[in-house]
Length: 117
Image (cartoon, rainbow, N blue to C red; front, side):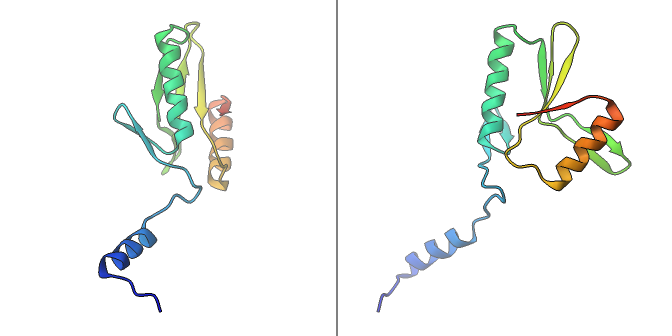
């Protein structure tokens, strides 16, 4: 019969109760910003390099768009180009039903495509 020490049980209990991401994404912090996934954080680093090399004019993180009263959509990034154009970017590992619905409403309302990375 195996016996656990009090410390072993506490460690087991704590590891069992840790909240895990529903889609197995790891939150990552860079430059004081917390990203929902490693993929999103890597894309942020890519945008920083593109900005430093003057490939893009600027970008912004998680702007808020009102789709309807009480319904908001926050894409991951908006990239602003030197020619005045812009791109709405959403870094996706998994497309939820909620995201798919909000994407359709956004594109219908703003007549602007969302680019999924």
